[in-house]
Image 1 (cartoon, rainbow, N blue to C red):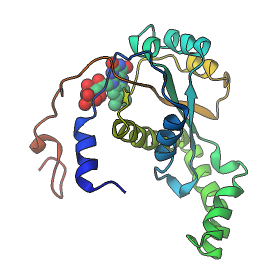
Image 2 (image 1 turned 90 degrees about the vertical axis):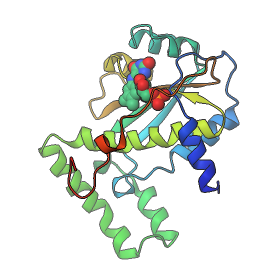
Image 3 (image 1 turned 135 degrees about the vertical axis):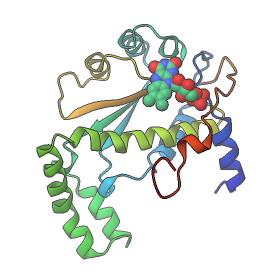
Length: 214
Ligand SMILES: Cc1cc2nc3c(=O)[nH]c(=O)nc-3n(C[C@H](O)[C@H](O)[C@H](O)COP(=O)(O)O)c2cc1C
């Protein structure tokens, strides 16, 4: 496990990189970085999110078009698409409950009750139009873990807004799926530029004690 100071250094050194070298990311490194990202917590441990790694030239081109031609997906050897799964609790996910039960992480009783609890929770979210938003939370935490894991491995990333959701879905083979949503897309690769820290607002404006604004 990394020493706390190493984690702090990685977090402080990470920047959003817009230009990438064409060098491919070794498959083992891509596997390691995505594995670390999947360590992210999720609601009910339901893991209502997936990562799609895209390296195929035709699909990278489709993602470039989906972003209106931003340079990152044109240059980066890997694009990551973070997919939020808003119907996850209604799906068969017995592997989750079984693993937590058999490892002893959860009691038999807790593991047995979890599928129904997760389903009821998600049904309530669906009734209130919040299921997408909650799945996006899971996906965004994975994306955040991935940015840190990538920086720790000497790789660059940049979270991206500004894409057409249907075009991104089509590029990764889920056109028309309304139970799946694109939370974020992100280039991954070796940096071709050094970025200066653009700064953060004064702590006093964004970090409060006890009461918002104070
Ligand atoms: C949700 C999100 C969407 C972003 N979208 C874009 C984008 O479309 N294009 C881009 O160049 N940068 C994008 N960024 C990167 C931000 O501009 C960057 O994080 C910010 O300027 C702070 O810089 P830093 O990441 O180097 O600390 C995005 C960042 C986030 C968190």
